[in-house]
Length: 582
Image (cartoon, rainbow, N blue to C red; front, side, top):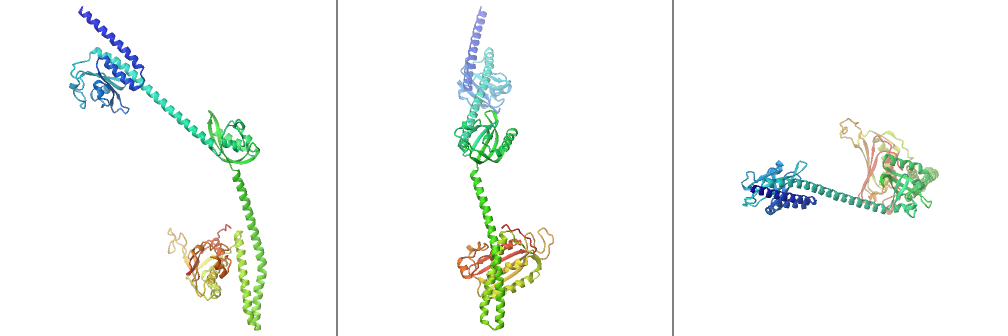
């Protein structure tokens, strides 16, 4: 009889356990939030084993530890406690994936060294798994000193509960992951909407026409496009063939470009064409096309810029350029014609004045000679100006011709000095000439080189009184040549210098620094007071500068007011003509 009563008592307790387990299962399945579920698991597990102490630990994402996430009773103070793999009760369950039962934790040989004594009595740990992988550990315990141990039926009941808790935990994790994915998707949708809104605003506010076309018809046109095409509303353009607004001369090209963009899905770079506005006005535009997807269909987005004003400016500039060129040509032709008309009588004046000087000398009319010489000098000066004007017009018309030949530098310098000496001495100046030995020959136009040097010597004589004018001629090394007749690569070079350097130095009035940069401009002198006192029209230096450049050389100047000036001409010993750019 006593045995039957025990059986009834065990059966009644088992039914109570099963009812509790059923209620627990329903309660767990309703919880999808992970934090709530963990709290419910540990609370129900403690109730099933009639204890107040329990915890749930979860394996960390990096698999380096397992940490208590929720705890009740004695374990409420252990939240955050971390166990290594295989360490203590929790680490052992994680390592083996099996149930671990300890009757007295303080005396258990595998207890965690860092876990305090007299914290718990008996303890049970069970794995919470998913797909064969341990996700966490469920643990319950009795109070220290209570002598409470967990029976086999209790452990079996808790094992069944742990299996259900694992399913609920897995569901909650999936739910959390799904919620996180939904949140991320929502953020992505919001970001996309914001991006689309910004893009729409940019298009709406763009000062240039932006349009979208699909299957050859407009499906969108921004406000700037409506204004450009003189449309009142989008209905005037949307649905309309794009070729309707393209000038007939450009329709074939535009149709080809549209097909290329749609079929090859390639961007088309800027293309100039003409559009016909809805009011009939023809405008010049610049168009770029890009393939896009619009409303789920392939489409082409075009950006159109009105360049009508730019085209008008170009046409105006071209007409102005042509007019300027025509005026320059007319000026050159006029100067050429008038110069030839003036040279003939001037040559006659110079010739007859010379004959009159000889006749006055023969007849003893010496008092007439100074006046006749003035006539000859003035006519010669005027003839020089005319010759300079003719040379200037040749440069502007790109018709300056050189006639180079080989000549001895030393002999050439002697003839220039002899010719310049009377000119230099007219103002009480002294001419000093220094010519280096062994300069050899140079290949250049001797007439034009003499013209350059005579211009420089004449200027020096004009702006110097009772001073010294020095002509120095020496050899120079061209860029790329080394010293002592060797190139930079060690190859042997001719012993003759690569350049001939002519320096004309005076002790005259000098040139202000602000005026130096204008010296080589035609019809320019240092200042007006210089022009009034010394005369001249400012052509000599400009022509000398251009002649030097044409012969492949250069001319430079160094000057200081009151100290004089030094003009340096550098020319290659073997000259090459540099085309004049006008």
